[in-house]
Length: 356
Image (cartoon, rainbow, N blue to C red):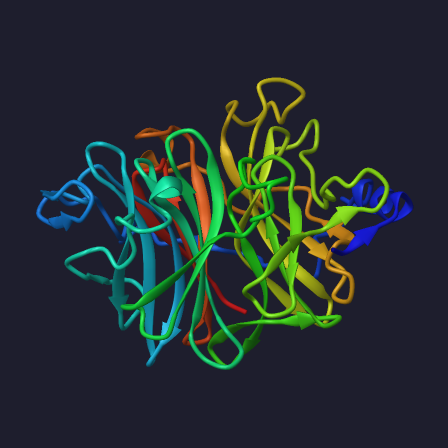
């Protein structure tokens, strides 16, 4: 178990950004593709033989949302959350040669089954994927398993996107196994067009959480431990909501956290509180911000952009399953552009593009 002192935690907790200049490390100028958005919609024509219900279900009839993305064989692979009419979530796959027009695969690639993880995944399902490359080969997927009561951050590995090994909850210890946890964003390094899990100080790192943000670490990508304080034995909070800002209610990881020479860039989702908030935004609006952590000490916050860089302002983002939502999870560098995929109002998927 890795521990840190109170003094270290205090430094992390009260790190803030300056507001007089736009941070040079942050992603900038994402433009929504209004001509084609939303790029992915629910569809009642897709069916799947559910191994739990022993029945055919329209697995993406209700919503498609919150995708992760990666590049394989020169194409963009989009792994997205899909909900049926009962609001059970499964993960689908869509593939594109241009990053805009996608062909959905007919059945989900990852879903609850009659296995040892059924108790965590049914009936809510498997939600909000994030996928990165492992250093040797294959992929690591983090996802949220929801049993209808408790969300648990889980992970799985695959070499072909067909055969998966479910690894179970990230936080396996009796202390945390029944705690609410979700949204695991790995620290990665861009190598060519791949985002590869990055070791720092001999360990892999993962940001997670959906109120405050916390850290987990691993020596082998399989066995994970939360970063705890040595005195109170509680998990270290490395990013918190800010009163008076767009992120006053909660913070939650977006895609992977990108290791750069300036530091670790974390795009995060956030929500605007009912009070002590950003009065310019409706309450509970989901918008995305950015934070920078020290590249040698992933728990040390060194800068934070004061304004959101994407927020709901389109009809399909303002009113649907959940109103006023842009929720970002997919980011790839494709044909000299950063392409950002995000869920809109928890119902559809859209795209924004930025040049380097």
